[in-house]
Image 1: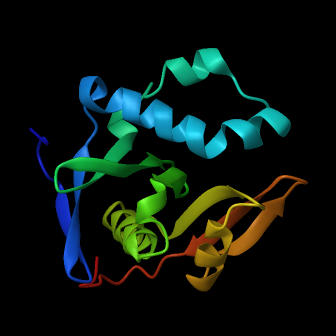
Image 2: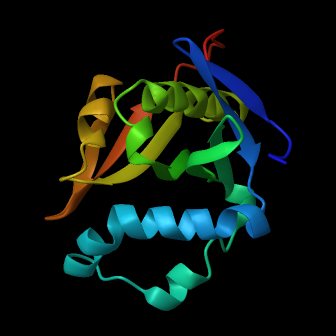
Length: 164
């Protein structure tokens, strides 16, 4: 059972489903994907906190699972802040990268920001993350930077869009 679908997004000739996080079903997937994607990088930069990692998803209401054919292929984590929509994380399994899923998800994030009345989306990305080029292509600009990562932001057009 794959759980309720929030939204279905067509990507080429296939589609993905966005579903709420179910801690029992999705917790292990979230922890495994996060470790695969970030353990080495975090260990050598800001530090890896195993106790914190084992508690994820600590705020499951902020997680949206990305599924294809009922199987998890990733997740996004959004935080509704007073001044912006903050994209805490967008993670995909390797097979789902570079095929338009990220672009479609970022359009979805813009639509969520618009629906919540936000005019800005913010995120933080490691300089070494290949998604940097995606964010730049989509109009995100550097707001802050340190030796390991950059804070990016994008102004959101408040007018509604049919895409996403």
